[in-house]
Image (cartoon, rainbow, N blue to C red; front, side, top):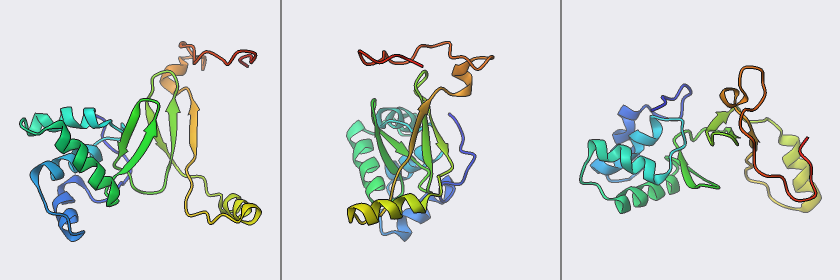
Length: 165
């Protein structure tokens, strides 16, 4: 399990108090699920969370994990993000962007781009009310690029008629 290096909200030991403060009933599965997601920066799937929670709570069901992940995300304790592999959960609810390695699939938190001007331009050109935005970066992480900065793993097959650069 990868431990978080950046703050993502209250430490795992404060999860119970945080849940109660926001009006959610403190149940053992809910507290453990929140602790598991906040203890990693790997953006786990529900199945991954389920496997980790079962180590501490062997009788928990996958349905309980799914239901609580959705509830915790809806209440702002976690963030949900969809990717090609399905829904993932992020314990870091502070503003940040993501980098996804196309070779290994790992998702990294990266500092957000401070570009309020782009949101203002979009709003003025379209009439949209821009409430939030998300930037996703894709490429190869340092480990997958290899020692000389070259990728040992080929990426997705290019679209017909397009060449890789």
